[in-house]
Image 1 (cartoon, rainbow, N blue to C red):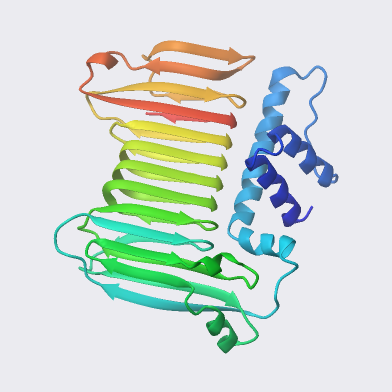
Image 2 (cartoon, rainbow, N blue to C red; image 1 turned 45 degrees about the horizontal axis):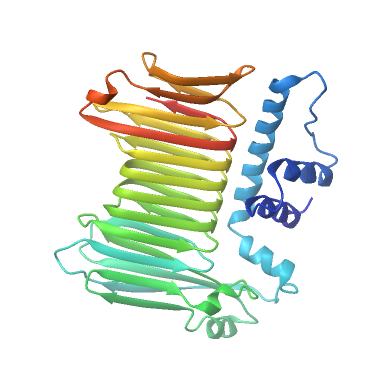
Amino acid sequence: MSKQEKLLILQMVADGQITPEQGVELLNALEPGKPRWEPSSTGGQHALEQGVEHVVERAEVVAESVASNIGRMLSGLFGGGFIGGPTFEFREEIKGQFPEEGELDLRLSSSNGRISVETWDQPGYLLTVIKKGRGRDEADARQMLENCYEFSQEGLCLTAKSTETAGIDLRGLSVGFALKIPASRKASVTLRSGNGRITLDGVTGSSCTASTGNGRVEVTRCGFDRAKLTTGNGRVEYEGSAGELKASSGNGAINVEMKGAGDWEFSTGNGRISIGVVRDGDTGYEMDLTARAGGITVEGLDDADVIEDVAISRSRWRYKARTPGFEQAGAKGRIKATTGNGKIRVWF
């Protein structure tokens, strides 16, 4: 099976045109030479769980392998083929200063390209614009990439976005942004990509919104009052703290390592959810976990007050519990996680 065929099947699942089970049948039909899962008449629920988990893991690998190039492949499928020529890359650097007081307002968006924000020890900012495209020669590629993005800075607000023509990927066009900001500044961050990975590192502030149609969303060493992370195809990773956190993936795993307490909600259609929590001394936790196929494990809370614990065969699929004294706890953390196909693991 070609990558294009796999991509189409995964996209159909993500769009709700077919069910995950129908997607599995298509994958199996198009890969006759590879091992496949077939539920036996006597295998029961355990065989079903093993088969689903195998399919989930394979789907995650396929989705992530094509995510970074989905724009190019889609243009080849529906745009009548690629325009030939080598790929050229050009970089532009924009440097500047922010006012000394106040929270930064960062807004970066691209139709097709990666976006990253990280901190450094310099007082100003550095925005690197990465432009790529195919052309007959370098001059042709440069001409095509003219006016492919817009940039502005007004006081604390910095905005960079690809133009509408950047979304037409007939010549492999992509516009990415890599922004460095002072480590001492707090920021409100809004990052959006139609196709591309989004990463943040070392940023703190009031809010973070990061969404991509295809690609990973990776947030490390960050802390926000509110954060919302979404991807259609790809995994979501978050390391740090958040008062409110919502993370969702149409097809991919969710891995988080959280500090302290907050209201945290995680959901994925296909993929595992792994949640590690560093507890504060007087913090109480409440969990509401649902894994429709795959199972649930909770570690480090042997004394939890269980509200609901439902299992089919040997796999737990519904679990609700609280730490002792939750209502009287000085701080409360709430964890809600839901996956259609995959395991949920929570550890303290």
